[in-house]
Length: 616
Ligand SMILES: [Zn+2]
Image: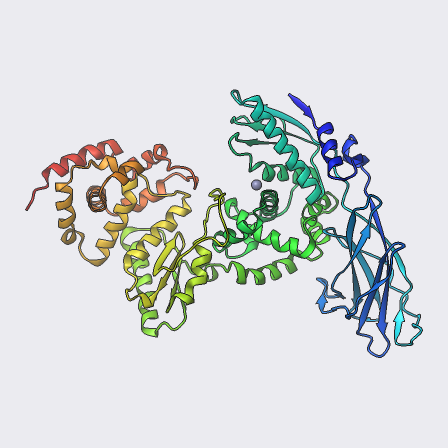
């Protein structure tokens, strides 16, 4: 089953105009890496020593001098140096290709006469000369001090690893044609990651179309229909190998960089930039996701953070970090070496960036567990206090009368659409990492709306002329509790609609006063309640029947078991997996425990009860 990749990858490397030497070697250490040599000289104005200029040239090439003084405003993470803007030098290689090298100047804060040079290959990490420049020489015009020309050898991209040994485990029934397509795609992925991110894995197992992850580690599974997650999983294999199997640091970086690589491979970076902010807004601080259990959200905030890091230090810095891990006691030190800033400085700068692209929802930013209304634009004080008061009141009602867990969500209330359009656009993007829209075009379509929302947020426009009702707050509360259980809805399907409607009635008046209308609809309907447990059955029924049946069913259950049973049921629900269908089987035992009868027994009782309803 084992396939050696050497021949295939060598062929591809040759086509791509790269050296095939690295690929044919048996271990990554034997690979060679190219060197680009440049020469640099620094000019410092004698009349105004704060003005620095750089001249650069590729070895044997022509000198080029920047006509503008270097921007020295950036303070290094340690606070000990000002670092200049980077200057790029294009270096021709022997094979006719060109490679970019960057140069930067560091100036000591305590002693500004001390200047140092750093270089890096494009996307690589800075390497700083350990001696300050000799600036004693004065130029012939007398207007500048000029350093001696410094010759700098810059190692280019890290050597590519040997082509991986891949163990393939294909499930039965996958045609040999499909198998070879998948192998080809894997070869493309390995090639892509090597060229773009500068490393390869030495070997791994891919299990296609079966639940068997294979016996050897590292390994990953893929499905036959879509092989798109293979780039993501392969990137994890490379991360692990470079890190030497040890701890890899924060989850957001592990998942964010794999997601970045996956989107880069698919050509979908822009798409991910559009959808990631919605999910990222549900996290208060990226520090929380260093070790968050709920890794799902790390993909989005992690992607945005990695996207920022790439802008700061280049794509190759991502795997450089994993390569540095074994040589550092703490991941934070490897982080600083790879990305050129400390983790604390990064967090500070990223959170600042985040307030523009994916600000955290307001309820995450206080210490209380309560819903928060954020008002944007000219919303009258009277409306503001009314909305916040009713939200608090509904929250207290759910907690005190029904024994619900307290919870929180945010409502953006804008005077006009323009006030909240940006929040609406950002938040209404698809939240879940596995909901991918492959046939998209950017910008994604969205339309003005008076009231919209999903789990954790609502956007409302007051100029639409109607006020938010308490059912919005009740349903928001239920949605957040379900999300905490990682359930898509409250099973069976009629339960969630019925619970929301029942509590909405109970908040306004004694429930019995309001139920006669619902009972009359139920009495006339011939839809069995059990039909509303499935999506197909739910959609086949009329809206009015759905609402009435669901509400009367929940009323009967709570009459029998007591109102507190409803949120006992929430608590007893198994932890689900968002994105998968509701887990009706395991929810059944929670139902029985909370309400004191099985779901089948309940359907029987409910039918009996229905037959007692009369027209009067
Ligand atoms: Zn992953």
